[in-house]
Image (cartoon, rainbow, N blue to C red):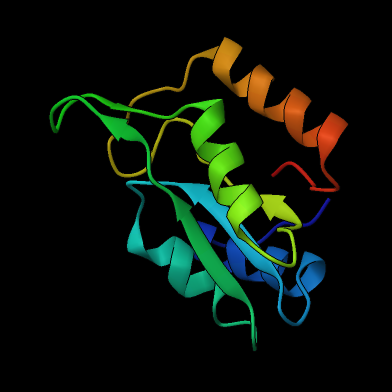
Length: 115
């Protein structure tokens, strides 16, 4: 267990502990700008947002397929996805079933750490 003051500090620690050169972090969008900033402070680390489908500005929907699409498009493969629940900045909660599908896929079919 590692305690820090504030989420930005926590994200930067994750980047430096888990990330290496040419690593990519993926995270559901829309998201707080700080996510990208915190992870890309690590030299040569990249950040790739997972853009959800939208049915109007108030109906962004994250899907397993969107996560898989971004994962498959990146080489070398991302080592970890990061998500916040409730979503930052929209404040909605991701459905438990969706999170479990993403985690199961990530743990079973990839080498990613689930953050």
